[in-house]
Amino acid sequence: MGGLSRIATLTGALALAIGSVAGAQIYPTVTLSSFNPVTFTYQYTVSQPANATYQLGQLMLDTEVLLPTWAMSGPVVGGNDQNWYSGSFHRTATKDSIFWIALNDAQEVPANTAWTGVFTVVAPGTMPVPGFALTKDTIISSQNVSSVQVPGPVPEPASVLALSGALLGVPIYFRKRRS
Image (tube, rainbow, N blue to C red):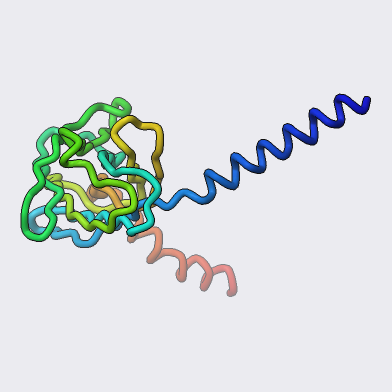
């Protein structure tokens, strides 16, 4: 029994040490910095602090819609487009993921380097909805998920009308119940 107890203690200590190292990771942050509802242009700011623990080489957004037509650019740093490779893939039958990847080591943002870049996507006929962004190094050994607004479906007029009608009927329902 002593041997099993010792193994359990060592396993627990190892798990705690690994958790502590993982918890010490410093990641870039992703925010939706602007959305233009006329042009459907989303701008995402990715900021890496000077004490970041891995090199940044990828950004991926999980959209809540299929994007039959889209345009992407960035990251733009100090007014200069770094021209990372961009693309998309079908995450599900009704949702896409869009991504930017540094093409080479020179484009990657080294660890321990303060950096801010702006990534742009134009997604016609969408509106911001809750979603996720993923920052990674280029070998996908380190990554971080951030909650962020992403391109999503615009409610159809019939749904908006039905919801409005239901909301207008609530006070009438309660008035009738009281009498």
